Amino acid sequence: MKAYELVVYPERCHGCGNCVVSCPVNAKHPETWGGKGPYSDDVVIRVENGVVTVVNQDLCGGCGACIEACPVNAIELVFKRK
Image (cartoon, rainbow, N blue to C red; front, side, top):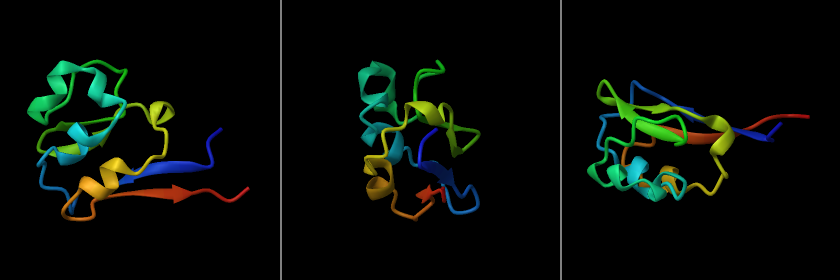
């Protein structure tokens, strides 16, 4: 189990897709460059219905690239207590 969780605040997100294209896990998919993200389950995040959605928490490496790319602070890593 990871010591952190990627959390999205949908009320802040406006679906720009910056986080999707900045994610190194998502970068292996050519469809990512449109900002919407691939429709497979082997991505961390993608934009669905106008907001970013965490698709596969287990693939997140905790690098924070998506957090840095978000202009409205809609994403954060929350560290869990042991």
